[in-house]
Image 1 (cartoon, rainbow, N blue to C red):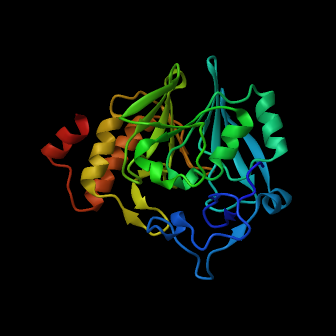
Image 2 (cartoon, rainbow, N blue to C red):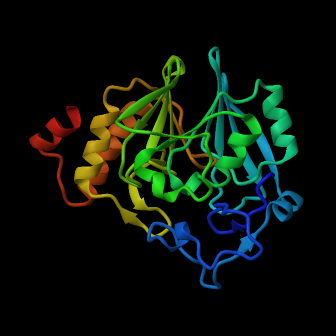
Length: 277
């Protein structure tokens, strides 16, 4: 990796090159994340490469998931979309080793990288440099970028087409710019943890996942409303085994209603109108 800056071992975010670790990790000290009871821990790209590797798994036609083994930091997976118009990486992993670069280059390289939210920014500047492609970050989350790079493009508004048929949509909630990626041709929604697939194959909507702080009902109703125009049958969230492979659009709509009921806001006629807008 080109940047030898220290990496937070709890969240995986890389900081600019320095001789000593930072005193604080901005991501971990935010209430959506946490600082371990034993204190902040740091690692380096060299140490991480020596102890971990990335694995690739076929998920669906044109869709591969990439994860780090053993699990590191938050433990999310990234997704590689291979489309007729080019390849897109959805979210980033902290580890970017030579094997990962060679495999992805062998599959056609990357035409764009898209980030769901700051918890998965990790080493995105390194990924952009390695594949010489733009990184799309919603402008509402600009303040969380730890390593600036000219390849980082801040987009605004509700959506942006990345490649033909591949569009990122900002839903908010977990972070102001928290987003999902819609692949229209295959009816796929990649959610990061803007919404999280749960063990019962429904979805949850949280402001903080590790600290169990839910989003309010009005915000969740707004997320459901913004998803309404999108056609998709499957949804893949940020962690292994957390996907809805059939009828995902209906399941997520019902999940939003369940969330609101659990917060004491029954699904009245006005709720139904809100969800159906």
